[in-house]
Image (cartoon, rainbow over all chains, first blue to last red):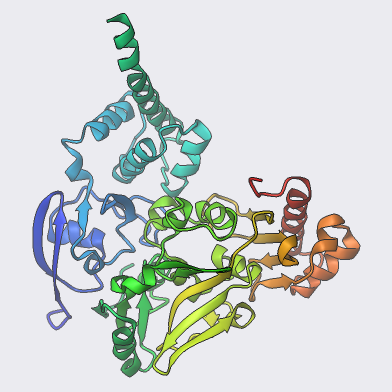
Length: 172
Length: 276
């Protein structure tokens, strides 16, 4: 498609400024995978249902398969590759490993982004709320039990840590 | 699948947006969050030649209070309504409904106006706006006009909007602080489009008690005086409402809508949803 419309696009991807040209029809997921060689974002249903392509746009989870890349001009996009030095994401990754929260791994990048959103936005979530929030991310391997446990592990650990400084102050 | 090729513009004002779409002879479409249009384009059910992104228009993101009315801009997202980031004109009804729309990642981008312009009968806002008797504020090449909620939807995915008109927002009459409401949505999995929706709004001070039967293959069915239905949801009262909504007795659809209506009526009767 040499005669396809291509338009300039500038945005931030994983803290790096990116300037490129895109066809307006190119989804954010395809832009990252095909033009930025960031293949950590997986594409499943391409209709916003399965959640595999979920990543962060301007600090909030978004479906990159139904969001045109060009609609993210000026935005701050963070894909799974952009979380390597993120303490909370690393805690979730360790919990996913410990609780067998993945098997084939296809849903995992989107699952981790959603999990991070749950833990940071809903620190008091119980298991029912975790499951409700996970309803937009499909996993065909695990049956979700390990995923819910992994998120629970991180939620509980963070709650325990939040309570710690007070206890430390008392013993000091 | 991937969307067919299209061009894209992101203007900063409504009149500019309209000027871009008018010459496309119906092949240009306005878009905001693209959470409904995006999937339709990927499935190639929609193949617009031009998308005009409305999210750059600051006026469409504004919410203002106008005495007894509140106006919510079309580009306010479901997540903003869920989080209480805008003023609540409905005693918690809209925040409650927003929480049940699709999934958080969708709610972060999907907008009130986009959902209403898309007009899927099984979506939430189209039914809630009917129950609230909202006014739909429209801007077009000839200026602005107001469409009453009864006239908004002509059928599934069909609204009163012309191809070069923009839904700029909705105007809602504030519910009084003693108003009560209930909302019941039936779907097989959280976040899916509804198989049945029932809404009740009981605002004695404003003299209204309305119900809506929603998620039918048609515009929402308004029951303007639902008082008797709340007090006594007996078959003699329920069944004419359901057949009036075009539902056929003996079918699965009839039964799920009947149950939704009964449960919403019972919730209102026994609890109400108003925190007071």
